[in-house]
Image (cartoon, rainbow, N blue to C red; front, side, top):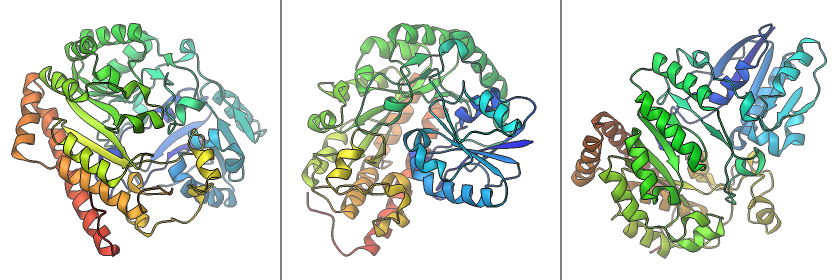
Length: 454
């Protein structure tokens, strides 16, 4: 019996942005590692290849924004006599919906329950639903990255050292549904790092953790391991972590090339409205400059369409951020996911359609914009196309490759002896701006009103 693990994506060949950086779907590698050898396994990843379903059993990992697409594939596959298993964050939040399109669904972390799913499959006794549970650290095994070999990912050496998050941002789903914060045993992580060094000797490590540094004790041990291994890396940090001068020095000494920080908004009432209390009162511009002095590039992650956003505020955001020396700014429009704290109250108020991911696009411009710029909710101060214009305008202005921006990124790179990483960032920034300009022009042609006056 042959099982095919499938990672469904979209837009990666049509759009350039940090919202579509290709990387191995490591959770599918985790499941492959606990699949009995009596099942032949393979991977189909739409980030790097066209979808094909050459197997007896097709296992999809499902995110909300791709749900309708996966369900269409699943229905066709089942009609053709193949078994379909669905899992992932969307299935965890909406299991009854997913069960209508699958022979079996798996909720939560599937790692510990997956051998039982496979045993039932081989015995012809597949159950309609299996509920996974948070994997304890002692049961975490090294991922075999040879499962992803032969594919050209932009960041092939991706890994995670922790699971869960100790924050509860209201727009986030995984922190509410995917278990408590846990840390991978360092010997397991070291084995993964060694294999990644063997497979991709010139690549920097990319930690994809929601909150890699939440445990300061574990972070210190992890950074010591990276210093010993002499591996350069990038990671995400929270704003309070970026503003921790001691932690920044540890990161720099351990080989950190860059960090992406969840700024979300420069307005504190916006941050409080979505539960980002850790952002309040933090000296963001000073922290970016300190990181730059240590040779760390900073990418700021922001949302457009937060509750207190207005045209005037976004104009002030543009002015404020133009004075902050980030190497990259990543803007996306807030998404209201099922399972988040925002979803049900907004459904009740009629501000977002229930099960919007299954309905036709509510906004005409959604059809040609990438997923991170699509609007599926009603904002009190903007029409949908206005939000989209603002996100694109902010990208065009703040990521513009001025001579000063180029010189700054190269200067930061030289401090860390990482000029190559600086050029990678500048190339990404250039592609992002070109794409934003193209999309903004297309949006202008498709609508008949002007951007709201600041």
